[in-house]
Length: 298
Image (cartoon, rainbow, N blue to C red; front, top):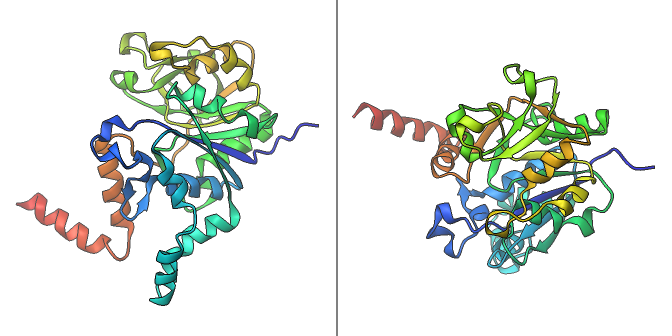
């Protein structure tokens, strides 16, 4: 009997990060810090809070810094212990002790769909979550955790579940957009079956104002539809094309969900994430707020 529990997550992290070039010439965009923690660490923390214990990192050339980050750095870590600063290692050690991280290579940048295909040997015939490595959501409890929520919906319906955000249609060219039929103007908090997905459509061709911000839980059947997708622009295999084909024959439910979310793959979103995370910090928030108020008043 197939399990309906989601035990594995895939984090595609093989993109070239051209929006942050030249910073990303030698540093993966997923390693750019939000205050003092790399972006990828926030994503993996979300996975852990959802109760998932195995992550498949899909990496490309020049991305070994991500793998190295989760490995042991003996000299540095011993120095921190000797200096009485082992508390700095707390979050990292917790992940090492409780999460199995598997690194796979996407040999060519052939799109998000291809990156997910690369995980097939590890995922097998199990449901799995997908989290984009430059999208951050912050939650203090499971009830606020979007990945946990989507996993619970999968357990309930035994159907793929995706998170959607309401956007102004003039932003449609930045996202995959779902077709939710007559439910276009409802809140979608209770979920709605999608009938299709369009990748980055022009505003006048967008089927709705609901966008895919990068959190999914899929049935393993998604691999069958990825196998059928024909390469598009630049030879890339788009996940949205596979989802569109899947929606014609399988149930895929879209849910809106309120949580703190930042697009750290966008320059403005990245800056906002740094500011808001810093404002939450006891060691930084008060002084940063004072600086911002003075800056605004000048």
